[in-house]
Length: 167
Image 1: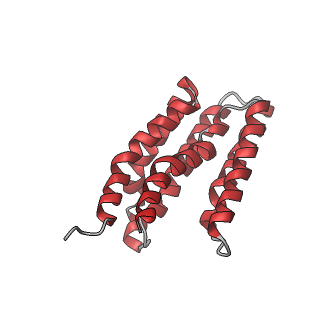
Image 2: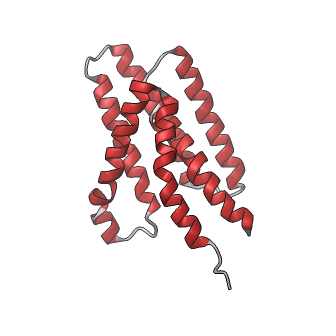
């Protein structure tokens, strides 16, 4: 039982931010070595998710690597076409997808939660822009560190609420 509680901390503070930053922010800046690193990272995440999920392969198993591959390909096409505003659109797309994927945190999805989704994802969208700025300006690991720090209070609250009561 203690292993389940510790896995909440590991997944929420380490694994989730790492996979999200790889999928949403790593493809923002592109060169040959980053294409290779991103592709290998997406395959590693997909393999890890398939191993963890066992026989049950759901949409959550493949969605982050798929988004990462799509963003990487889109940025590659934009860079190859030498579009001046391409980077701006890549940031918009990446941050919007980052915010939308977090709607899945609010389960079960109801009509009310879908109607209120713009309010739910607005702070996450702003954080996505902040993480993207940190990624581009200071490097991948600073954006990752900020993402991990942002997750700590929420994950600790979930961790505390999931602990059995002490008698």
